Length: 258
Figure 1 (cartoon, rainbow, N blue to C red):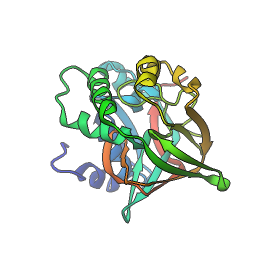
Figure 2 (tube, rainbow, N blue to C red):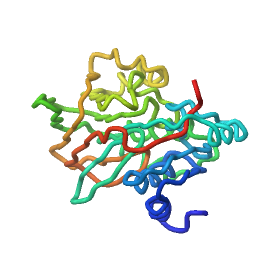
Figure 3 (cartoon, rainbow, N blue to C red):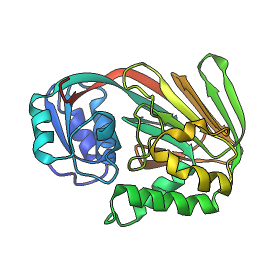
Figure 4 (cartoon, rainbow, N blue to C red):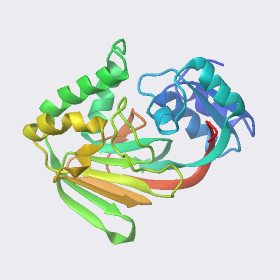
């Protein structure tokens, strides 16, 4: 079936029962399907055909159509964690990465652009444009066990998957089945920091920057002096305050056999 309106694929996934769902699309399509499949016993297989394809990267899904079909038909069904975010009185699930801060503005700009240059170029252009205009603000991040971060921040990344934004290696050590988010807090970075560190976003080496903090937590609460845009799987969904929670082993995805 083809999606005919926003939420259509979530409705279809919710009604699928324990059948195999073959998803043809990118991270946004996968996000919509997960929002329906989270309460079912369905298995999900992905034929990558989108802009970012970061979920597929994390799970080593082949980009070639024939190879992806072979995984869909004969791959291993693996239970993976997903994320749940609550904001503005609503609940939304995500399969790969959520964030609050400049990433939300980047997602909004990227979604409004033509994708003819491909995912990597589209997201990096959007990142550069948004960074030049972005103003860091005071943010409070509360983690499980009462741990807290507070101060001027640029972005807060809440990751299950390792890649985001068309191939940026934002959480290189993230695991999809450990019951924890990889939480990356990007502090009060400036334009010089961006110029010297931006290329390292694609290698994961940016985590060594002194203004970047990396930790793990099963819950993350984000609030800010001014409402920050929030996105999940590249889809803008609202503004802070927001609470993120891991939902362990919530969906099953077909991946290449070891």
